[in-house]
Length: 75
Image (tube, one colour):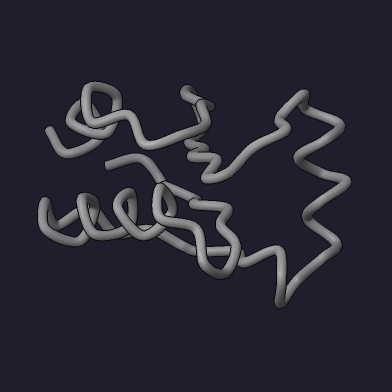
């Protein structure tokens, strides 16, 4: 299974829903919270992202709570 990274922030409902979906579907992921690790803000902006959560694998990068794309990671 691909390594999944979730970039999130505090008090973000879409971030919570994304992490819950991944957990419920037994998808291991690494979380980087930009409130705790602000160095990731520039990393995300440089890649064109302006909102969270951002989900990143080797092949896939997208933002927002997207059950259709998250389901593909759970397979």
